[in-house]
Length: 347
Ligand code: PEP
Ligand code: MN
Picture 1 (cartoon, rainbow, N blue to C red):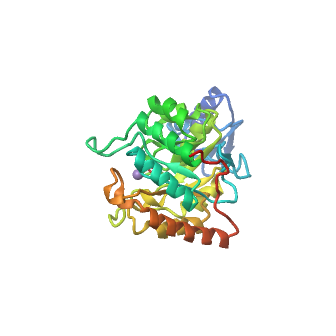
Picture 2 (tube, protein in one colour):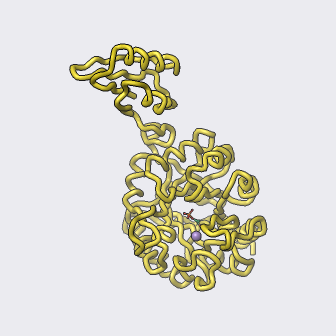
Picture 3 (spheres, rainbow, N blue to C red):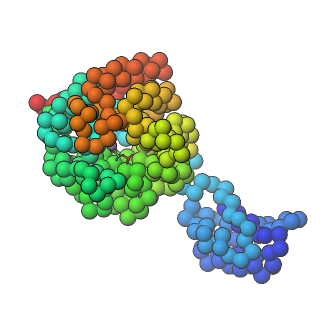
């Protein structure tokens, strides 16, 4: 890190920056220039509080030489991270992992029907929200623990791994108990107490990109999880807020390869929330596959018109079946396959 001083910074100001750097446990290296002085921070282990230095008198800017996130970066680990799920599915490898299911778990019949159907179509992971983050307090909030129990039952019946959201630090232990993957939702991407709690859980975790988060902020949130000891982290691009109401969000396809070049973590794409429109989900799912996403998350419901949340962006089972054929063809054209669980269904 370099602390660049203003051109009119005094020798005392440079001196006091150097003293603060020493105070922080690093060595200051003043580099005098013709116009201005910069002070290098040597011994920087990635935990320097840049804001403390940036606020000192005479400082013009802080220049990061390495990325502000460390352990999730490619510089830290050049090989792709691979996450093995119970049931034999691997996320982050050659094969594309398809996560599918309803926005919310609504009933036993609904979740068992959709689980069976998506498994037959080639999905490897069942999704379904039990604790739902809804914009309105009057909207369906999820079945809570009963929803988790139904997901566990659906796993028993199909052999699919299960992903569901932990909405707050209080729900982490119940979700961790049931899920094979803990989801941290978009609205919680910067809920740091939740991230710390999930970071101490020894469960694969999927971190969705915040509604208006930059890729750097997203990776810094992933760093919270990893720095607490959870190394089984995957990211999920789910669209960001745009100015145009044509779609619910702007699905950022570019962020998929861009993030993969910055980080070794797997990147999943969620075109359902990314577009908010059932008619656009297949095109964006195909695009994300072609862009190299490690997996897709697709909302599917036996009767989308009657879904208790996100029906507008949810595919019917026949629509999902068609999409899976297209996805498979694209994956195969790129030398990839669709990951399938080896775990057998029991019923
Ligand atoms: C979801 O996956 O159902 C969800 C609420 O997603 P997001 O956090 O991306 O809005
Ligand atoms: Mn949803």
